[in-house]
Length: 136
Image (tube, rainbow, N blue to C red; front, side):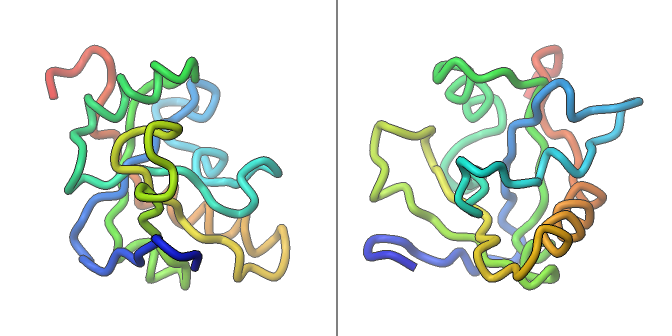
């Protein structure tokens, strides 16, 4: 980890992830919602439930001109059960990132196949916690 980053250890804290509309198929969240792109550098952007609500995270994410169908959540334990870390880097990013920013750390993964497997496992645990039509 870099200076200013902190590993999130509360096993029940929710990890919020905005879901691109293409990553929901037949009402299910696909593994692409938790898959890193090359620009992520194996640090998948998320937000902390202890800092921001799902609705706030959705609105903040949209303010950066990103497309989203809503916010899903997994708990920290789901991340750690997949031998991944969840890291709060919000102090380092400031206003350049959504409030409560944190990332799921895939840097220890040795292959693209391993990343896909872990992304799939997280997507299977994820549940939608906010959509624009919901009241949360």
